Image (tube, rainbow, N blue to C red; front, side):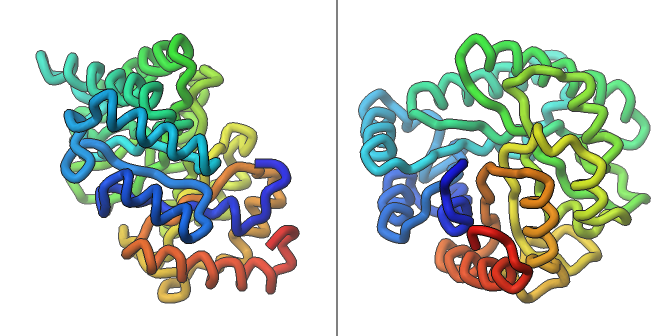
Length: 279
């Protein structure tokens, strides 16, 4: 957000590590302004969000100014094509939108699903069409969806996430023009792509980026590492992304909540060394 320091813009993805209420209290205590939670299973099982729980969480965020987001499960195949389960995939995404309205969440991170090598085309088509329907519903409900670029798998793997490459990420956003679908840029997924973080920043329309998801990486395969233990140059990352005009929030996604607090300090130090304004 405009006017916030870089420290204030770096959030923490609590996922299902703690109950939402506990996580919100922890965030407020530790001066964390942005939080993601995942609401598929305990301690934040979807069915547990009755009116009382939703009201409590919404009021806590409003009182403190905390920005709350929801994060759908990447294991749910948004590219589903089979009878019955394809309908369930639609309902799953709609349910997250409905919950976001009840709980006061400002965004919902979504995914494109995955394909098996022999059915890439039909599953990508199903994925894009499903996300288009979901974006249409989000427009009606006043919800914001953030599509994450997922991790690439080895070339000979049978299963591959979508979108993972720059080309596929561009395809999704060219096909789905809704203002209620923006980009969640996961830098550790981009880091071990041949074009790297720089290639994604240069190749994407950064005006559609609302969140940057952050972890370190070894440059070889999918792993969410503590900043400073991998090969990501965080000073260069911040310099490139901020220089491209990004004003949204960052979301740490690695280790424990304390690890993510420590990682925030490490990344801020690297940003200051790189001369990033506001660090």
